[in-house]
Amino acid sequence: MPSKNDRKEPGISRREFLLRTAVTCGIAAAAGTWGYVFYSTDPVRRSDKKIFTFRDYRTEEKKVYPHLAVVHGKDVDRMVRAALEKIGGITRFIHPGERVLIKPNVAWDRQPEQAANTNPLVVAAIVTLCLEARASEVWVTDVSVNDPNRCFARSGIEDAVKKAGGKVRLASENDFVSTDLRGESLKVWPVSGFYHQADRLINLPIVKHHSLSRCTMGMKNLYGSLGGQRNRLHQDINTSIADLAAAIRPTFTLMDATRVLRRNGPTGGNLADVSIENTIVAGVDLVAIESYGLRFLDLKIEDVPFIQMAEKRGVGIADWKSLNVAEINI
Image (cartoon, rainbow, N blue to C red; front, side):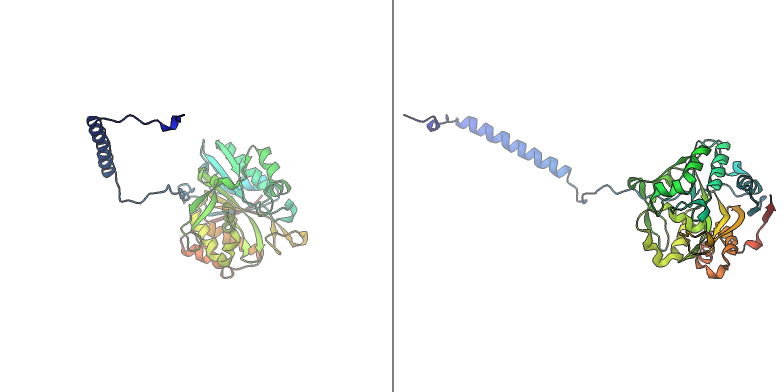
């Protein structure tokens, strides 16, 4: 019995063969022509990740106001307000509708009395002032060294911010973006994206001893903008701090010297290492503020190389005594 697989396909005529051949050649020719037209010698390009740069958060300079305001007292809210009034008031710096980012030191899982983090009363006072100036939003952030939730809670800053009407913003892994700091040591580095979403930046450091850089105040407080392996920067810490000061120009800096951690910084922990100084220092010259703060730690400008390095880069003036300084007691 013949199998169905033994069937033969019917043959085609010579005319049909020539017609099929012509069609096949035409398709091949067209494909070759289009391939030539759209051929490129350029390599295949992959989409590059966007590299950000910091905006300049400063407002227009006004020489009619003192360069620094130093206020002594015990009522933190009054001290903060008085310091800002001396240098032009909050409305000089914050305008209606602007988004404000506040950067205190909230690096450590410590209580306020241990002076490892910025005084929560100082943070609350600044949040309140920004909202009074009709800022659209007021964010408070830091890239903490210890667990950020514990740091913001135990420092008292989380509760203070919420009561004042601000928002705590903690950066997740996906919130960091590559940013070119254009420094000698700091090149492209992951930075919290909140800095690129804000119109104004307020720097709220606390005065502390630091085991490596000898002190941490306004300049080193800016470390809290960075992600990645920050311990790598300790290999050349003075250059790294000067790089930060040159790259990030806050709207103003208000330095908390109500409590000062004089020894065993930056983490502290022992109340015996804390000195009560009841002082607030405010201004736009970060180098001058830093230099003034050295008195609380018994340091001189020549003891802290990054201050001189920042001055050479045009960040500010180290000789604060040469400037117009308003000092008051309230």
